[in-house]
Image 1 (spheres, rainbow, N blue to C red):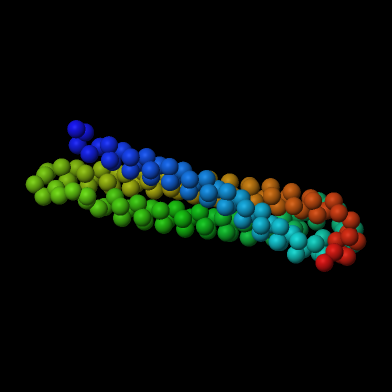
Image 2: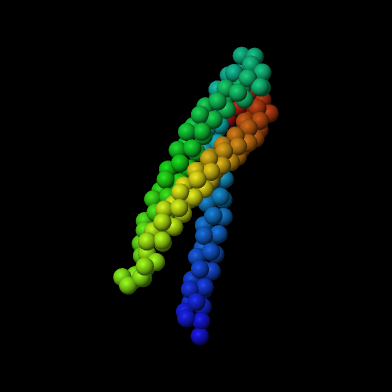
Length: 166
């Protein structure tokens, strides 16, 4: 008899699988959203690209003018989203940590556990801040790479063909 640990272990394993699945799906969804929005943004700017190229701007200048607009939106959106997600996850974890799941009325262990909870919350805050910043940086780098790839693809087409296409 393992005092119910086998049931607890299977529940923990299921939560581990679900969290891994959600992580992979979140990453895939982020990549697809970045590709979709860069495609929309760059396709809507194809006439601008054609006019700039016809006026004699170099490809580097066209790339910098297009990517500056995309980068502003990308930086604001990614860091705002990652910081709000981090704050929300801290709030949810703080609520879960403050709940007592057993009756400790006759126990003297509760005081030391409360101190441990506050130490864990401080550790969680630094981990969440690092994760939020690194996630924002990764999203920005990935979005910038996708946007540069799409922009270079549009710049390889002739300006006249870009103006004619509907």
